[in-house]
Length: 313
Image 1 (tube, rainbow, N blue to C red):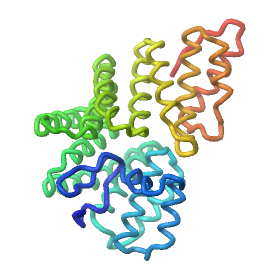
Image 2 (image 1 turned 60 degrees about the vertical axis):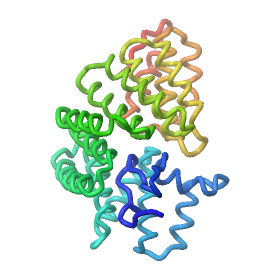
Image 3 (image 1 turned 90 degrees about the vertical axis):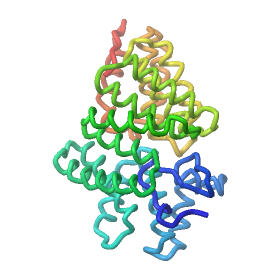
Image 4 (image 1 turned 180 degrees about the vertical axis):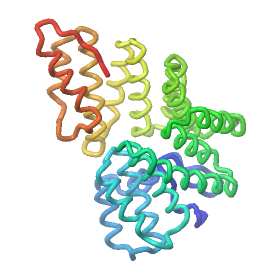
């Protein structure tokens, strides 16, 4: 039976304690696997429409919906929902923390650092209290991720080392996936690309046995990107192709555009120009996130040259 206070989750990395076990998937993934024939977002919207507003169940479903938007890179939907929900009063404390966490990331992505730090501080304070209450190692990882996103790499690394030392005997693959993924974020931010590649490989190896296609796709793409930055283009392309194969039609359309762009870049860097043009033609520009559009335009221009000289951002 679920503990009521933990029915509501913080971000994509928090887990449900159930009967002495750990749920090995994101909130929305656990919910949506109940009816695999129906698209996940449709399931959430239909169930929300049938649920009493502001009940415990409603907040739980809203938490799943926010997690889905975040996981699938649906930034406009996430920003709109988070802004609206922050206007509510007397929301459950854990749900409020989830809103702070997402609002910090949304504002940071928009370059509004001062406002982002305000919400990051609110989320960090709540996360520390929740860790003290429930001793969930993923809350340490979540807090480290927040510090890393805000550019506070030293604080993030200290928390990750603490989580590793306290829970080094954990057999939970999701913990090791998240821990090593976040170690790689800090290492990459500090220019330690070889260390980051090692951590990303550990994250992929940890999550593969679970069969969780979403996390396997993310881990493969992360590793591919680090190998690309290291100049190991063949390995990078291999892992991006693995990531694309693991994606679900419809659900992963936004992230697919990013990985197609990286794959096209890699073909070009490997001087496989025909393959680069073919992959580039598969990208749907309307679904490409704004941050990747300059790289998309650059690659288009490079591939128009008789002998392309390909570089990546």
